[in-house]
Length: 106
Image (cartoon, one colour):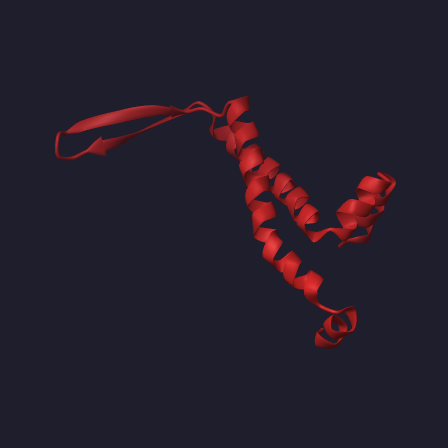
């Protein structure tokens, strides 16, 4: 972890200690930041019209791409849940290691 990020977490006191020492919570914070970056990248696509064609019936379905606040919140929640679940197995595995054995393996 970069020193500036550790310093920022330590400013927050107990929350900083919790975030710097719990890999699952750190992963959840990273996925929230990643989700926010993903939302910012998709914002320029708001109100873009596109469509799809059916070549059997020669019809076209057109729709607008809308990014709503409810959709952004759902994306952040979904991303943080997936990040937390994805970090559970490595966290459990790391917790079972003895410190000396983990240092020797590195």
